[in-house]
Amino acid sequence: KLRVFGLADQNQVMTSDDPLNLSNHKDYWEHSKWLDQWKPVEVMRDNTQGTTILRGHYEDEEAFYAKDSSGNYLTLLRGAALEADFGRTYVGMMTASRFGLWDEYQTLDNIPGAIRVKHMVTPQWMLGSLYTYRIGLIDREPDSFNQVLSFDTKYFTNETDYMYAQAAGSLHEVDRLSEVQIAGEDIRRDYEGYAYKTGFVMNTNTSWFGESKVHGDFAWMDAKFKPELSKYTSTRDDELWGTQITFAEIPPDLEPYKIGTGLDRGRYVGRLSIESNNLSQGWTNEFDMRHVRRTDSNSFIEHVMRNEFTVNLASGLTGKVFGRSHILPKTQSDVEPFLSSFIFTEDEDPALFGVVQLTNSDIDPGLDPSQNTWGLGLQYEVNNQWTVESSWSHTNEVHDFPRGLQNGLALNSPYPDPEFPSVLLDRTIPFLYGQHVYGLPPYDYYSIVKERLIYQPADKLQFIFHAAQNSNRLWGPIDENFNHQGISVDYQINDRWSMFFDYTHSRQVNVDRLINTNYQEFNIVDHHNIYGILKYKINPSSVLTMEYGVFGDNLYNNEGSLALPASQYAVTTFSLPTLDTEHLFRIRLEGEF
Image (cartoon, rainbow, N blue to C red):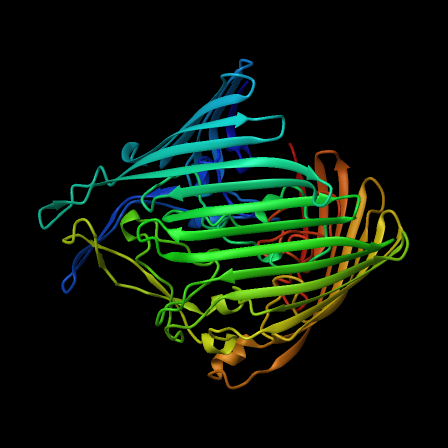
């Protein structure tokens, strides 16, 4: 099957099925790395510091920010894909170049591609290989070559149990067209790195544990391993919505993202997960544990354990017990011990990997920044119309928002290339300020109580009262855990018309005022947000939408109910991008033309 596309979105990208996912591995809300653009080397001369360079690299700034109001990325692709299935042998390949909003169609700044081959040696044994490449261009001349070659295998011991392994190597060549020399040293560089992964999946069935699925794996990724068609930084940590207790059903295609893998460049990880389902006794259990260390120094990064137990207590009554422990190493002076990789990512230059740390001058050395969460929840389905939910959590977890917004960049901090000290590398050092107001290690515990009352008088009409009381008054409105009360109406009027309405009252600390008064005025302010959306399905492929206000964050569009627009932080409930009603009316037509 051959596909040629003059313009296509990132959904056309080839996602490889090898254990390391070396093509198009990303978080569910992220844009594909296939959309990145090549930025050539920059040379900066300074009379005091000498010559500093910023190596050529792939940049995602334009692809990340260029989105429409529904969260669809506006950077497109042009290229072709070919798939061929010969029974025991499968071959798939794709090449596609990005097309940005400000690009001319005939111009190219990089060409990525991938080739996947799989062969069933026997009905139980598969051998596979994946080759990816990316060529960075300057005026159609190759300035960078990135190549990754891997081999993988999978062996089934029965229909459900199997073992797998993969080995991969990368070669990353940059600044090939540069003629700059520093102290007689050529700045062109080649980097080699390697990655490995092996694991097993085993299914058991016992009278006590019921049906259980056990998955164990070990993965290693060098700091200089550069798979330029995949990124792992956002998937290494648990999603925020995966660290909280909830009764809402997580969409099946988002479930794999709930728990982080721990894997990224410069790390090795051992992980074990066990999912048990005892239908006869009416309970399920999800257990996950991972241990992460650095590949270069073997230093400890984190140890994470998570367990979620769900049980049928009586007819219509469901209980949950949740626990999570995130053990971190002792703090270093002036170094932030943990902030999610969503806001701050590692430097793209392999020579700087692990050198740049997030500075936080409020941190003292030798303290314990570990974070723990315990939670209990009850859900009672009174009848087919009424459902009551309540949960309690006790935690000392610190999250991104709003504390992550209090950041800056220290510029002009050149760093000698570890392999060629005469070459100074440009770097920016991110720092946080005013973090004492959000709490410092060892972090204090606080409690969150949530309630939901659901009334469904008809199959397509639902009223939801939602509320939360959070003793951490600085928790931002990124999910349903902030202090609020609200009511939502979700009505699928008929096959063509649907609507959703929400009113939320919240009480939030005025963070801007807090900062401007040097953290002296801790004012809590009432906010009111009204939002409504009406959709009309013209035909199966075209929808007319009328929308008032702002609610949620449509980075991921769920099918069905309009009440669940998923974001980076919330996939089953909601977030408030604006605390107060945004007097904005939008009308748009979406479809295939």
